[in-house]
Image (tube, rainbow, N blue to C red; front, side, top):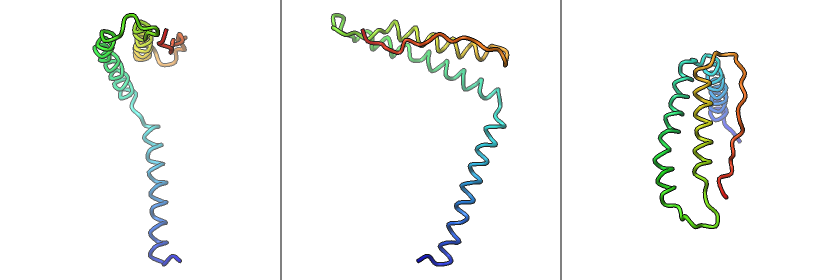
Length: 108
């Protein structure tokens, strides 16, 4: 059995949750296009920062393994992703474009 103090406490939490949801939706609508471009530029930087880790993993690969990881395919896909992000940053806003499919399977 709930007392008056307990039910009064639950109602404001529900109102607070709805309020936070609405504020979150409003901030999405009011998002800054410059902030999106900055975030995308950071993604490009992070993709470029993967290269030393990829090179290290590739140098430690077993050359005569029956199934090898295709580092060249991985690099090609990362280059496509990086180029697509850069095209989006550089392109006019309402221009449609074709995106080539990623290979996705890196085993041979």
